[in-house]
Length: 499
Image (cartoon, rainbow, N blue to C red; front, top):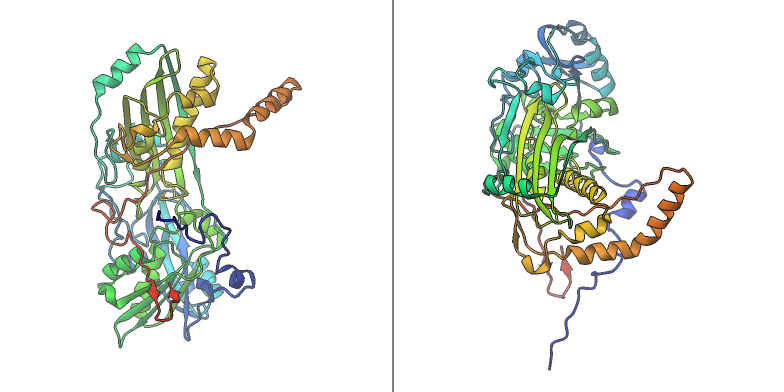
């Protein structure tokens, strides 16, 4: 008798989330809900200039305020807290959780206050007086590469943080590019389009800003850290390393997290400082970011410039792609800063069987908030660059954008497909996906409505985009320990399953 396939009961069904009732009823526990007897609160004094040397810091007025337990400058923090680690194998300047000699972006911490409540801590931070020697600010990544701008980091010859990386290199991927084939494709093309594109800098803004609570127990030599984090495993690994504790002595808890969009994957200086001060002072420590801080001190996203060229035959077949990416990564490398833009380069093939590709990536330091993972982490940027180029080509050839894409898709029988960038796509049927999207959206009707609106003088556009992304990159040599999760499923004697 033939076996009857049994689908899981949840596949294709609307599934109620178990966490929704408690969140809707206000019974969730977030970092700021964690209360421990004797808890002290942190506030950071932050730079209000983009680039400058710290001449002096006067903390006397802050220390005299009621409720203030202690005030630490960056130099004092540096006595017991090493420079922060990063999570990629790329060169990186030393980055202190609290600046010692030089500030490099607006929001760079220069001192930290410990006080009995957050308002006393905030008032004390405002009372700290910092004297700066202003330095020229580097804000344009293309000018920063020219050698005419101030150099941000003394241990780098210029402001180029990384690159130019050639095609096929990136986090965990290697490939070879045939430059002769790329040049030949452009020489043979009937049509070549070129466009400079900007993927703008974005500031993530989750409903819950960042926050951390750290509690050190001297008798057990154990630290518990609560953080609004998307990345508790790496948080535990790195905090243990920074505090010279075994990982078995550190417990990292991510309670309810009120949004993150990738920005809470990073491990931040405030987390290290809270943990270090909890251990040093023997007091529970809490820090809750305010909204103004979030715009300055939480990592930003995107901020790429790309010079994109497509070579095509008259029938719309794409023969070659050239892409030069410049990434403005801000003042420092954070956890995954250097690795995120490599995803943009790696995804240059997108969903298309482009036979010849050359892509390069240069990452540049500027006096801005550092960038890191944000909603897709480099992969949506690549889709924007390639898909916009396809639309420009469609307009140049007077071909329907959907039809142009069809003519260039990787076909189902070509999978697994190794791209020109060194990635391997396991499966896909892009034409089927496109046809379904066109059908359910009523594409032809939308085109008619667009044309009618334009005839009336209204500016109405109609967009189309394909998207594919690489996933599952860790744990690996390029994504170190922590790039994993743990779950446990138990089948009880009575047949019940607990997870």
